[in-house]
Length: 168
Image (cartoon, rainbow, N blue to C red; front, side, top):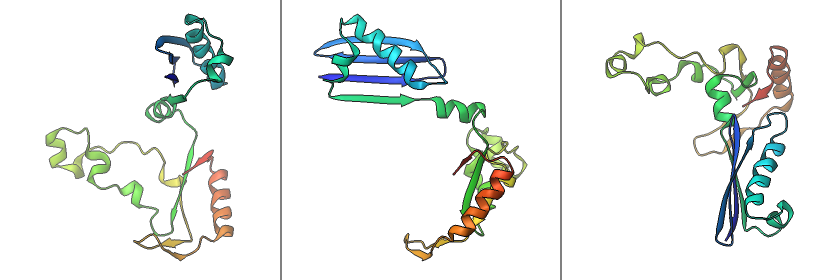
């Protein structure tokens, strides 16, 4: 088996290399400006331990597995881009309202018994960055009426004007 597994974290990029029964672990600093650089640095470290070149390793591996916690870290630390959320017209308040599960997890038993009094978390997407678009899909997933592309462009422009850098 020949496998490369790389995990890009907030500080370090780790590589676990399995090559014909031999194993090595490589590590490099995560290079946020160019994730490929840290990826290759960790891979080079692991390959060097087995006296392999990166070229011969990559040309003959069965699989390259890649994972990262960068998205999770950005979400938890709230350091990601300002997000604009597009939803079906009429459902703009569904996310901000949340049902109990939207903010009940992690609360004490006492707090969960009185959810209306519980402190809600600061939303990741503020209400001002949520806009409805004209379209509809029924409960079976069938399109009731198609997306109005001009409407979507208008909504996206408004959200960009408010600072949106990414969309969901």
